[in-house]
Image (cartoon, rainbow, N blue to C red; front, side, top):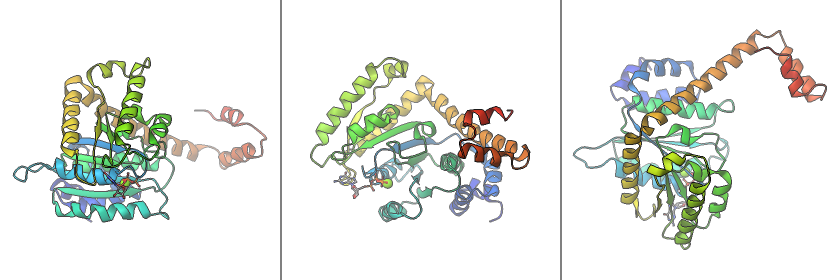
Length: 319
Ligand SMILES: Nc1nc2c(ncn2[C@@H]2O[C@H](COP(=O)(O)OP(=O)(O)OP(=O)(O)O)[C@@H](O)[C@H]2O)c(=O)[nH]1
Ligand SMILES: [Mg+2]
């Protein structure tokens, strides 16, 4: 496709899809296009949605996306990026999402895309970050990014989003799982979905109690807690309940971000993270190219056979 960047600038969705595929496949044309489009990024409100598998994230994202488009007279545009870290062979979850996401297709302001693992470890996190850049350049007002949380995903959503929703559900035993994985710490808004099911109130109460404990623990983000108290909201995505309240909380968080300077800080963290990833990849590739032929493999072999330790091996390389 010719001159993808300028077509994306004009709002061409096909060109955008093409760029997203390039990014996913690590095609160098993707970087060239992103390079051209970079100045257009930085305007979207990026919302991360994470939580344990099966808590209803995708169902909730569908509802949110529709709600965020607002009134038909002055519609806002919403991009949804569903990141699936599972192997391409399991495939089930994505297919499920696709089917449910069909009702989004009726909304021209909503654009849906999923991304799966490709390439090297860490590749998905970089690709996710780059795909968000592409969507921002596409001019969307909101970019919703769904990832599976609870330590199963290599994508650090809190690093990518302005506002992070952690979605739990009763009956998954997640409160304990969540506390273990430290997933509560990244929540700006905590959602107990499947509020239509038994145990939602208990789950909401115990999560609120855990947040209190977290808030009392010394150190982390103490300053931030003074001005933003993480709300615990109940939703039933299936029945379209609690979505208005959730959208209201999201808007409040945005106001908080903008008035506290956090908006800018978080926007910068994302770029710092992307740049560091790119730099690390580049330096490693260059360094590896420049070391004496086969020395790297040789040393790995010596580590494998316990001839030397990884620490001794490190001393053999200069920075
Ligand atoms: N009872 C009830 N079921 C729900 C609700 N929201 C989602 N579900 C159901 O829960 C199941 C999982 O929903 P998904 O939206 O795919 O959950 P997910 O968190 O995106 O799952 P993964 O992407 O696989 O991690 C589906 O069968 C949904 O229909 C809800 O509010 N109430
Ligand atoms: Mg999902």
